[in-house]
Image (cartoon, rainbow, N blue to C red; front, side, top):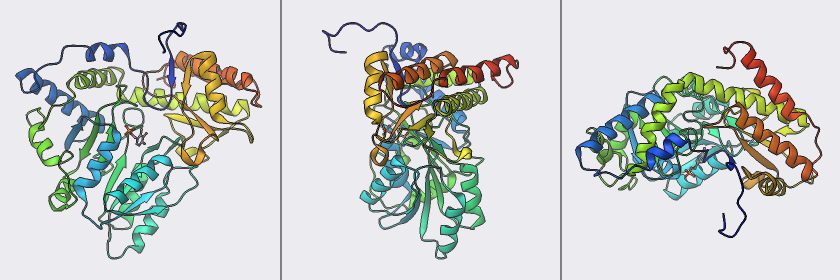
Length: 401
Ligand SMILES: *Cc1c(COP(=O)(O)O)cnc(C)c1O
């Protein structure tokens, strides 16, 4: 985007697994004049977006909106519920789970990691076993990343809940849905989640800058006894002000205009249709990857992500070189491999405001890029994806949803 670079025609393909492309309707909503955040119109907007987010989280409980990236809402979840020296059980699904664990350590919380090879979601049996061994109930919380954005594995939160119940353990359940909320089926109340963490720039289709906590009654009770220091992140003031739609400090007013629009758009399409669209796009992408003769990083079909697919590079080929060839040739951004899988995988984002043709274009860019970068592969990935996508339409919409 340097001013003296030649113009590149058409819209940039932002196919990283968040931030996802922002729809024009949301961009227009955000472009409106900022209003007085203590005035009467703001209160109505505040109530509307808080209530709207309850419908997205599927909760009747409290929701808190921070002017912060998702990382802030991670910290809020821990700082509001725990005390120095508390133990928590976390699952090493990948890079983001590892960052959340590191954060817990910095805050003075002792996190035990259930290790994994980064190729699947959380194993409910391993969680149940760890909790059964914890006879003193030292673990105050179980923390799981719903959709591990670094690997493309989606954990089954309903099964995690069952595992905690089967062990008869009172730990809180905290779930990071930063890259899954509004893309993958999620039910805060039904699944007995105590704190759900979310962010604006992935399934919610907004620019970065907002993050969320959905809070159960049990988590609220825990917050009364929690002794970790918190000020900016404190729930109490946020929830009290939120009852009338306001914030204790200046909110990100314009992003809230965008959030209001995003919630409307999600309900216009229907959440179930949104989830079905993501499932379809995940399946189409995996068919392309298989036809190329390449490997999906996630090996457990129960955990295949509807949000992104992490593709393993053939031995001796650098994923970041492929990404840069594709960016230069086709103006498309793909996700990089993070930490342990750096250069070994690239990630195709298929989340947010995308449709079948966006996906076909994305996969076309990948297939051409594989050729240009000299990465060994077979042709026919895009054709396989197209055949699947077209078949869904032919059956009259049931599958196409
Ligand atoms: C993106 C992401 C984060 C980090 O969120 P930021 O908005 O970058 O702070 C954490 N967890 C998951 C699963 C993510 O996808």
